Amino acid sequence: MALYPYFDIILRSVAVYFFMTIALRIFGKKELSQLNTADIILILLISNSVQNAMVGPDTSLSGGLIAALALFIINFIIKKLTHKYKGLNNLLLDKPEILIHNGKLDFKALSKLDISHEELKEAAREHGLEHLTDIKLAMLEIDGTISIISQDKKNLKQTHYKRKHNRKNLQNF
Image (cartoon, rainbow, N blue to C red; front, side):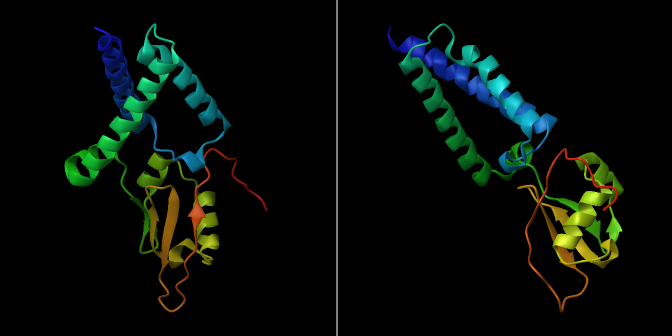
């Protein structure tokens, strides 16, 4: 049976996909644009460590292509299912988080998300706001951006602040 080894590769690849999805959900929600050097190294090492788990002893071109195809297909299916089923979407995908509501900081959320006071002030300045109390609503969006709606409805301004993870905060300017 010539198809059995390829079926084995498909099953292994799908298992690794689900493992990685669950592991990334548990250990953090960084987006690709937010990766630092340590994150890239981690991803490269993980991909190297799970390669054999996906293809087993088959190191042929066809084995690698079958594994890649299985990953693309399962990713496509998961995206379709998360759009169709809200429960699965909630389980697998992150949700926006409220950081500030009516000028009041949510310290629990900020701590959980590892967002510093300085980083929040930087996002406010990027939105043209001088004080955090001028913020009606600040949200960490699922793509890593911090959206801010000001208290002043006359001077609404749209900007795009992309969160930078794991960088040293500037204490003194």
